[in-house]
Amino acid sequence: MKSSTVWLSRIAFALALAGVLCQDDETLSQEKKLCEDKSAGELFRLKSGKDACRDVIQCTAAGLQAIRCPPGLAFDLEKQTCDWKWAVKNCDKLTKEKKVKPLLVTDEPLCPDENKLACGDAICIQKELFCDGKKDCNDGSDENSCDQDTDPNRAPPCDLTVCQLPDCFCSEEGTAVPGGLCPDGGPCDRVPQMITISFDDAINNNNIDLYAEIFNKERRNPNGCDIKGTFYVSHKYTNYSAVQNMHRLGHEIASHSITHRESESFWSDATVDDWAQEMAGARLIIEKFANITDNSIVGLRAPYLRVGGNHQFTMMEEQGFLYDSSITAPLQNPPLWPYTLYFKMPHKCHGNLQN
Image (cartoon, rainbow, N blue to C red):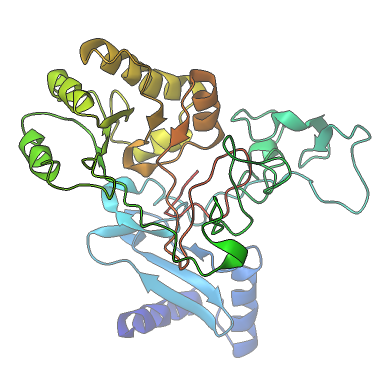
């Protein structure tokens, strides 16, 4: 806290040297000018360059607040958080990129055709072109308002008249329990505890002994059957005879990509074709070299749990994947119940910079 205060005083001194800080009124005027185009809580720099990449400031009700990243880290303006120096690519910028928003909510409709929406420059384009990964507006605004609350083509809220088991399940809060196990909202003492066991990446000689110890046929479910797990298999370093044996023992095999690219942003920004090559391609490799011929590879998990947004789920629909195990939900009590993706998911996508 002390270092932040000292650094902020240096900012004030630097502004004074520039002839800005001559009197209190002028100080307030300068702060107002700095903050007038900043969103709530936005952190920004007064000086660009690698030497100043740790230091940012924030506009607060009490004035400017200085923040400094720990040694070895730098501040990423786009992520709005400290990160490793090598991972930060915007030290030469003072503020995060300002993106033009489409005119989705106006007092009067801007587009006479109800199937069209207005770009930031008021030009109307087809609704389905928004948030499809391609910039169709002249100002690119059709791709700048695409979270689960603002995407014009977002999934609709849960509709229990349409969404019914066994093909669909949803609830408004995400905590409803199906099957009449929790009548009228409680008590829920008939709901069984369910534990899922899953593993990522390669199956090979480095871990098959561990898996044999975990799944030792002594740990059983209440019905007497051995416990099973799901293995999300990536191609690199995988021993496919070991994968075949896991499938023979009754474990589920699912897809986790071919390359497992180290760039996390790749998975957030990957196209539909990229996702198909990685996930459907991995499934083909597993089926061929592990001799899994029962069409049981129907799930996937994205590397680093980095969800790929509409592109990922478009690929899943096209390629016949039935579920995703990448979306991370925040902990809560009562916990969330598994849901299908025909309707809007009942929680925020947990994690940093998720798509």
